Image (cartoon, rainbow, N blue to C red; front, side, top):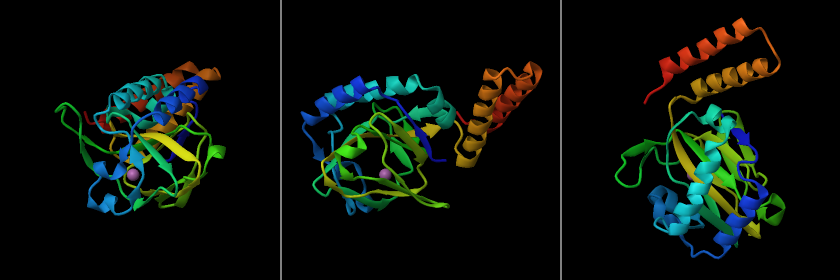
Length: 226
Ligand code: NI
């Protein structure tokens, strides 16, 4: 499931984050990928141990914590601390698939990447190119979102970032291990959850809503892995 979640960060947060990132020292983005990724990756990242990465990453995590839509879609169990990247001057990232298992910091074990997330930090009109292209069974989807908006997509998909030929593209990105590994099951739960919410908001029959809510939780109980 490909889901666009608007307004994770507000304008003030995005402006402050961009200012901090524009003044930061960047490292070669190939440091965090294997040989498959290194061949096709040309961008920069904030260094893994940079205090700024931790600080801005926490801002992103706090913002996610306040988004009911994100939680309904991702059902997050573990989240890798967000990283930040920069593409400019023709920077790009060719088709690749994200690693399946990643180490969490501070010997906190591992994370299976079920969901990949990109949080856009520049308005689309500030740069040319830079579309995130996601290839799934329905074809290729080009994603270029307003600053502060998030795209959530299955980590199993092939994806790439088009070359940035004018301006700069800054983004945060991170991976999530979901309570529900299977993308199609997560989608069913998400659709059920959002329908229940709409029925509740529009004053539908309370007993029917209660029964559907029970069905949601019983499905989640069957499918959740913790
Ligand atoms: Ni990727």
